[in-house]
Length: 219
Image (cartoon, rainbow, N blue to C red):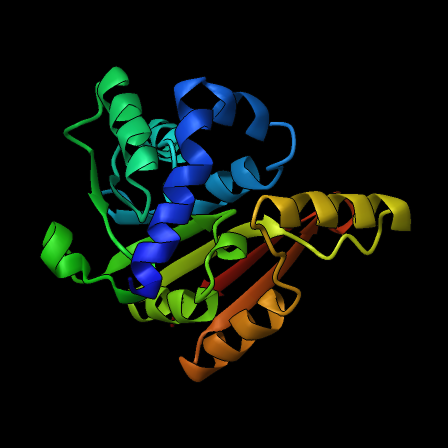
């Protein structure tokens, strides 16, 4: 079994019972604190194409579609369990004409094959790089898929440096139990990628470092 299959099976195993008992969306709002600020900052151009990598239950895509009614949205996830939940959410919101979904490995994803879309005005990744073993490859590939003037927005757990040590240790241990590893070098890696593309990067620290938002802007 290859690494892709292993990771897909792990994600399905983690999320299967959470999805079926409605636990995922009910609990994540209390600690995935950077999601809504990320969505508010996307601001795609009218008619723009937006991709979410690691779309999970579809919560972010549905909310983004409401915020930006003139944009088109695509979402990918490696977990079939999550995609099933996302498809239900999209159907329930009546957004099948504006949100398309596909199962894919973000580290080896061709949007042209999946969606007939070669590049994107906005790409976002919300609390997924901390669960993707090849996260640097995923961020690199996402940057390469940006259109001129496009932006990549990433929200995830931060270094929590502004929080008490006991809290950081407890949260880090709890995250590790759920196969989540905060990426301490996310800001540095984003800055290096932006420089390599003659672009700009921005680093936002929220809630005393509990959440980070990294942004790469293409020229």
